[in-house]
Length: 272
DNA sequence: TTAGCCCTGAGA
DNA sequence: TCTCAGGGCTAA
Image (cartoon, rainbow, N blue to C red):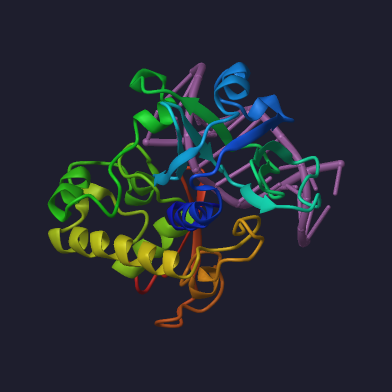
């Protein structure tokens, strides 16, 4: 599932392809994935140049010439593909953007349709709610503010890390990996974390995300780069998806528990 | 705070 | 044929 590192990777790759290029055509095949009125996509996109591409949490933000912004969320199985051939245009290709002077097209493809696309103008009230309420970015928040965010919360730390309104960008993979790196049991209540543990967690999150970005993200089921290549960070996972296997540090068997409806993998020895 | 829903394909 | 994967939203 695309989390911060995967989205960051896609953003970087998109810049090399569509920055400063003009959208020539918009084809909507599955209106259900549109999170804004269809007419906006049809009216506001054609003829507009891509001014800026960035990431906010797990959202891909594409600023267009004028005041409109496209927001892609990839959900679990969403992909943005840059393709010339028609191979990627199967029944899961929901939105297709063509660009001037280019045979390739930008294809939004999403098997489970948990993802979607929204469009906003300069009016902050028209931002998708989930964008408007996003918490701070892991790479921007200061250590003290991060600690303050968590230390009075009574919820379990794993669930809090998944809460996008608290901190933007972490999903199940990087929450598990960060907790392992920090040596913290995912079931621990945030309020019970010591100052030292909060410090370790802050650093662990940033290091894990940085390394994952450097590896081009984790390709597990559906996430691929816009040219179809895979990320490589899945090979470096310490706990995620490794239940029953020996911990790479201490060889204890990695456990899996269900927390807040999500599976969590951790090492019972290394994470207290 | 948590359960359930959306959705589809993979694997048992 | 059934179960599972889960991001984010809604209802209880």
